[in-house]
Amino acid sequence: MGMQQPQSGAEKPLLTVEDLAVSFDNGSGPRIQAVDGVRMTIFPNQTLAVVGESGCGKSVTAMSALQLIPRPPGRFDRGAIRFRTSEELGWGEVDLTRLEDRSIRKIRGNEIAMIFQEPMTSLNPVYSVGDQILEAILLHQQVTHAEAVDIAIDAMRAVGIPEVEERIKAYPHQFSGGMRQRVMIAMALACQPRLLLADEPTTALDVTIQAQILELLKELKRTRDMAIMLITHDLGVVAENADVVCVMYAGRVVEYAPVFELFDNPMHPYTRGLLASIPKMAERRDRLVTIREIVEDEAQFRRLPGGDRGVRPWWPWHDPPSDISARPGPAGDYLLHEVAPKHWVGLWRTKAMAEMDHSFPEVNFRVPIKAKAGVG
Image (cartoon, rainbow, N blue to C red; front, side):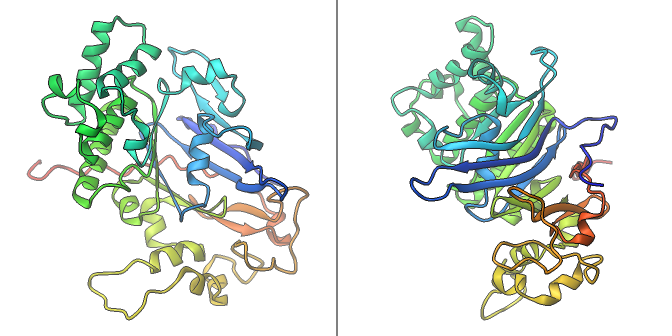
């Protein structure tokens, strides 16, 4: 009995996060456990939305894949992030957390790219946007300067920047917020990465520009056969853009399911709390339900399959059940269990649960592309 390893089906995951734990030094106090036992998978041409409130470990998980966590004060305590490299690189499957500096630099930007939520702090104000895109291209591709300029122009044109031949010479402060984010996307996609880590890419933008950027990412995913990890706290963005959803809280995955299944049948009380806290246009309420009100409701136990037989959802501010069967070490009180087909929930490791087999969260699902209006 115990944890089964990721399945080896016809199509293998592009990225697999296995029991990742990351902590940070806290001076004279105990280390801060930012990520504690995260498990997730991303398949080619799939969008995995990682959702949760600020501080739940979403960004730390993504940044760990590219070793962007400063060490010290950060530290990889355990686990692995396995990535299937391209045939061009020829490394096979590697653990990104254990690569040397020279090797991880060949992954960054080339195989895996990342865009951040505030482009003005990510772009260098004293270099033109063209120079910054060219730097990424020349670093990772064996091309001449003239060829790199053509690639940069094509990348900027692909993300919808007008008058590219002139704008490539402009500086970041000469672009609007939405255009700066398009520059960041162009820079990330110039080397044709197989995986894009998008860390709340629309947070600083108004709603109209948000929609444009998200639609752009969807279109680029379809045309370039690229996988996306979309980090967000906006469940509306999740519903419109995700194939699979990973809900995180306090450094752990508490629910993992295909997007339709998660919204139709949320099982973990924290997920229900997130959904219940969203105001609805057609419903008038004096106050919104808080997440804590839902997760402290004992009736939530019985909404899980087998809730009366030792199945208890995990959350950090509750005492564990009396029949807890914790393993030694971090996260020993917790497991991620498939309570329904392709639907995992974070549970206390009660004796009843500890005796069962536990599969790895792996959902090879993509939302079907909707037919365009007026087409067949």
